Length: 80
Image 1 (tube, one colour):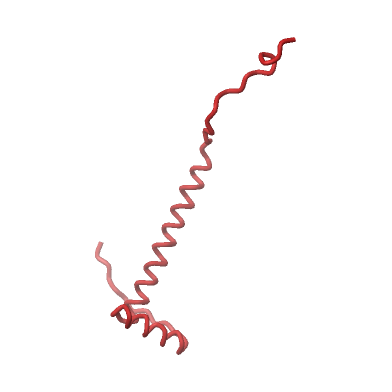
Image 2 (image 1 turned 45 degrees about the horizontal axis):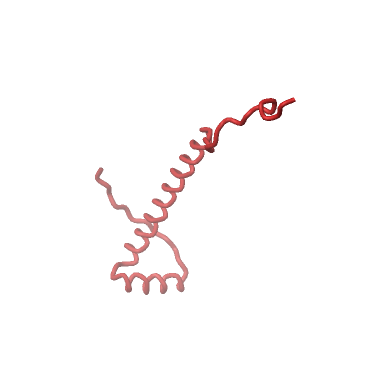
């Protein structure tokens, strides 16, 4: 699937912008690329969480076999 890039305008305080410049420079990328990568990571993490939650809820619908065997009846254990 071909994806088309679009612009997004955001407003950040000066301290956040300064920090973003430093982080982006350390990674040798632009601030735009830094923000894009972080949003993509957050989106993928959210998708993973939603899938994991759905899987867990589906598994809870199925009974769990906890091992062991059928217990003996009381009257077979004790002679009267």
